[in-house]
Length: 218
Image (cartoon, rainbow, N blue to C red; front, side):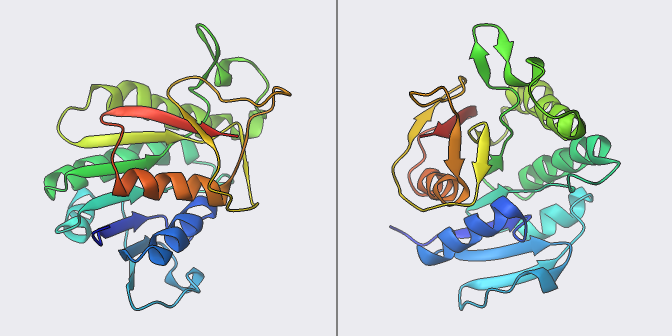
């Protein structure tokens, strides 16, 4: 597998740090873009850590120029009172800056909220998600549905996790799907963050999805 130059936005977060480890373990070169560089404890010959404000499209363009792909694990923080506004603004900035840099591929860590649990019913409309996280769920959903779904200028993917993503094992055994929530025999929808990262880097190395969403679960 040819080594790729990746810019990973949000590399110090819960999902971002798992993707960072997976990418480095597979020999890729990673520029980790973070608000707080001190949160990155990993040291690696193929890792560059950059502090940057990704709310600026020009900044995103500068830091992503020359990359084979951009992976965005950006999250403004679940406790951020402005999460709704910041998600919409900054994800648009990431998209537009990456396009302006001429990067061919953008892989986004998506949400599970827009997955269908039955025909015509999305997870976020079932009332089962905690009210506290709904502003973040809705803003990421709106970015996907209203912006990404009509985006033709870059080869993007929006990778939705299972309903529950948590620390666990890297098994390498999981199922992938498109727009429907993946559930097991007991009706539960789970994935470890380690296996989510495996599938994300699999998609980076061997692109199977183009300008579309896909999802994962056991």
